[in-house]
Length: 610
Image 1 (tube, helix red, strand yellow):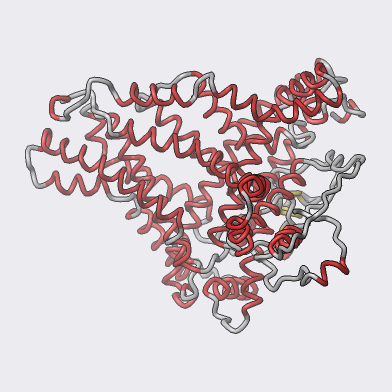
Image 2 (image 1 turned 30 degrees about the horizontal axis):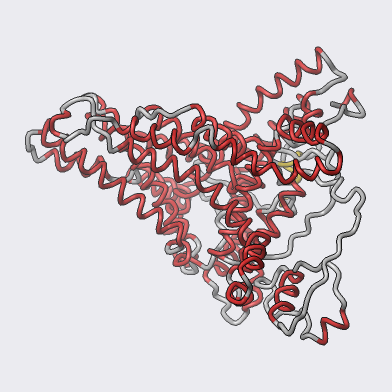
């Protein structure tokens, strides 16, 4: 049961609804229903349906996603409770299936659906990377059919026209309900209107968000109540934040990019990069497979912008561009650094829990498989072209090593240059804030358990769409020497050079698959190294390192800054196409704005503001 209205006197007689843990028992109404059923003795919950009027009429995209983030986090905590375990044991099969579908089953399915495409693409890349090269195939024991053909047949079996029946089955309940209430033609019109207004884009992004929050809750915990609010759906959310009147700094930091970067944008860009690598390695697939991959990437990247009112208005787009520049390049990039430290480098129980969770385990497994494939190819290349020379061993080691040597040397030089020559010291307020964050990361205040829980719980509330933005007036800029954008550019250039230079021999001899696969391996290991260094930054002993920890901090900040800069710039460049089309729409037909028709499914009340 899921009671919204309860008989207080009767529930008190049954033991009440209060719980001791505010994070674990976040969904108090659901736990009240589960406890009521577990008490047995023929107790039943009477379910009443009430007519409702205009409920949810004012919910925009951010409000809906905030609501789903809250209930997804609550479901992740429910899965870990004894109530869920006991009900699964005592309920009859029909009731157990209904209970699973209405509670954990729906959210688990959404998580698996959102994970399916990255898993398929990763498997595809592994198979393509293990394929034979174009030359010296007699040394490789190559099969008759190539890896691209084998994966093409597999993907054609998975992604065929049969999946249309699955999609039809998903829409059948709504179609049947509208048919019974309003007639067949109304049901067909409703279904067609949903597809034409990109409802599929909305639900794909929703599945990604539900899976992210539920799995994070199982891995890390820390669910909190999130006030979703009831803001008007005509409100436009900015890209990064809102500029001050003089335009010199961001007055409020918070927007669509900051809300959904970790949830969807990073994974979408990785998926796009993986699809490009698969094409380069000779991957072939049917039209259905590429359609599903393209729809997933498009939905993860652009859903928040498609359903954002006046997103493609030229005036607002120019304001977003100025806010983006101020966020990344003004005041020594201090606003980006504050956002990163608050929302992404936020402590999650320290180094140990970050490194040994289930996601890290699968990462290590995939890394081992990829390493075995590349190592065998490099050994064969060394035997064929190096003729047993001692330099071949060194070259093979450099080809497998992560590109971190030159970037770390630069970070050490830059950190000590900042300390000894520039004479730039962080303000006392910034040092105090950094020390408090480091203390919270390691749990120094062992006696204050409630404060630790609040510090851990704040991560979920800050990542939720529509969360309270960071006030830039409270930030203390910490100037760096050299500036963070320059350091990010130099670090990325050194990483690319160090990764590609030892592999040029593979490209010169026509081993293109081995060359690209080795580059992907190096990027994979580099990502893992950055993840481990971030775990070190979360530890309680990091603040005691002082100047010795500056190179590690500079290395992480440079890489993360470059990633955010690239992803946000990519989004801006692609969204500019929508701005151009919207501008043409305003010039040719100002009374019918296609973007407003897509969002509201009606003409705007003020065509001049569309």
